[in-house]
Length: 281
Image (tube, rainbow, N blue to C red; front, side, top):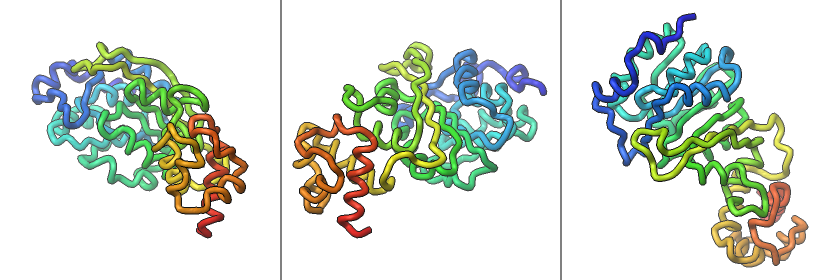
């Protein structure tokens, strides 16, 4: 199979030809180093089966790497109208292996986007990265893996463990539903334009069966309350859930004098189960 990259002009030329200056409002920072993009694509594993989904391909740097890494079926979702024409030659070079969707990634149903297994690979736009991730967690039963680039601080929050500085609501949601791995850091200078902070690539692999108690929708409520006032004890912060706090803590076996950052994933799962029982939902 021919590598589509060898037939295409350099990415900087593509950006110049189509006027693709990165837009701050879209959270865009382009990664043009093909060695780095190929490292990301290969970290996702075997792409020759199922469907690979990329969100926010921009001028196509990571897209080229995904195709070079052997993706048999790639669906790229791009909201920025300017990028569609720039990506058209890449669609042609892919020889039927790539489909380009000019849509809002937040509104796409990833459960029916293509044949399984579904692997998501993306240099996520800074301004919608976290909402996209939470949406994928809610539909994780349809996703095989997510290999994603975030700001380094967000990546550290995703993979943080209880009792550490970065442990918070996103840590709980991600690690309740997935195994999370911090893969590597990318310096700000690798991007065009360079952001103010470094980035990092993380991988989330959804569990076939969630090993912790609870429901995702209620876990979101519990963690929002607990970490929304993280300086307070759980006895105080969880009162906003609207159920008897003593009963909630007793059912879950959680010490109400503790703060959210000390509670592990299983503990939050038990709080979620207790909330469900007390609400009768």
